[in-house]
Image (cartoon, rainbow, N blue to C red):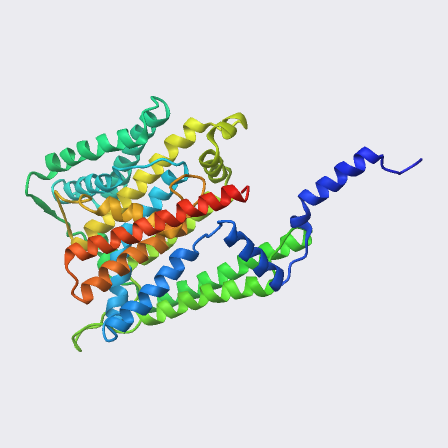
Length: 427
């Protein structure tokens, strides 16, 4: 029997080979760096702008305030200040991935914090009950918003603007004009004001470093054994080493006693950092390792193509608003923990703008289809660092707003230009 391939099929085989040539090509460190440079040139910037921004801010504020900016106390303050913004931004990443917006996320965090405080202080419920109730209220708010956007087909800008106004009325109704509800529960207060034992911080840092390295090496081994495209081993080890160094150095800094008085000891990683880390791992897993996460990217990239592929676009749209509002509730709880109270301004003012800014500065596209959970963390740190650093050098409040606005506009401009580059490159 002849095994010769007809001429027409030879062409098809060559085309298929070229389509999957990238998957089968052997990569060394040089070709991997060249590929990365090619992705940068075509607009695939990833987290690079946020990382460069963080480094620039550290260098700038260290030069301006060398005695205080990198002190152990201020670094711990930076992490604590970034907690509510990063959590709110993490929920907004899901909404932004669909190219939608949730203008009510900030006040949703305020309403859920008010619900938690009233149930805790006035009704006397235990902290697990009030936390679950607050998160449930957030999810219900998100479900209603998602239903109005996905089923009734009202633009998300209009729906969430209406909720932005209406939910402020709910906060006033719950707390009363000019009122404040104190939060005194030890567990909730500990979220943003207490630190975990030093041994636990080191244990978690080492376990996370080893776990991350193990997962990356296992993935690399599976790709190699399957004949698929894989990064060079040196790059995998370098990335794992950088993550481990960041975790261990951060733990070492936060484990040093930073109490101003010699008779007290304040040391350890804040509990809120652990909460953000756990939620970051969960959100990253959902977005990158589950069909649901892939469907979010598909709908964000092209809703019509996703619908034709059999994806339930309506369900995806409703669910992202539910996730966003659920994480807004967690953000509200952490903010209430930090202030140890909830007032009528909770979640208002610049809360939403800083959270949207954090997501965009971190690398999430306003046009949908691109973004990761880690963007919220990076962007939240940038926002917190700007506020913290400008506060240390005694900048007026109006300049803080101006500079933060310029940074957000700069990040949005980079996103728009990168999108044009991707379109020109056919990505």
